[in-house]
Image (cartoon, rainbow, N blue to C red; front, side, top):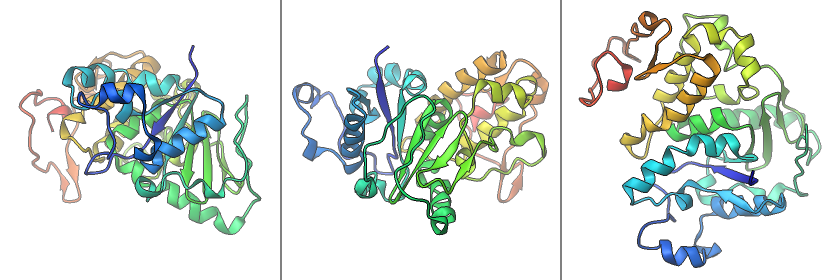
Length: 305
């Protein structure tokens, strides 16, 4: 299998400055000028080269953005792109769109081996709370496509301006080792308070990534609560294009199908279908708030909202 890294980054409300289109594709197949790329793209290339990996996947450069057929075909593959990537590089700084990864503080090349961790700078206990809160509150966690990128990745390095975080199936740890947790809080949150469906933006970076064993041990494979935590986390996120809402969850839904052994039914699940049909719309104003409907979706599924 070809080894590659994948870039997880914000598009923002105005999109991305440098993209592949039908107009510039032939030119870019010959050469992509580094100076034309955003700081985030350039830093992704720098890290990938430091890791001695030949390939980097960037959505804006690997999907022809004004070709609907290519977009449908390639966006359907995004789940496997992140799931099979050797490493996901996440541009998590609030100002990453203009300043990139913030690599100035990195003093030596990163090395990833079996069970490797990031140990690049001495521990600074005064910075523990600050950097973890910055990571939890990263604008990345407000973007829709990034949800499944976090769900499906096997290992992620989150780049902040001044700190890195390593996240895999067994560990979340900061570069300076002041933050270290093996407790999977977000993915197992249904089982201490099943009636508390209140999600915060920090959830996915509260602990390690979801693994198959975590899913089974939590009991999530035998009830549907965990799926609704996923839907809630995804539904509060924003999209550059509203049409991306359902496609951006398709990879996570396929992963859930694999984990649970259940079969999807338009955003619901065949096992315990009566339970899944009991969804309601909630907002700051309370339950049952009227929302605009998508006429292409059936009214009995939340996908119509």
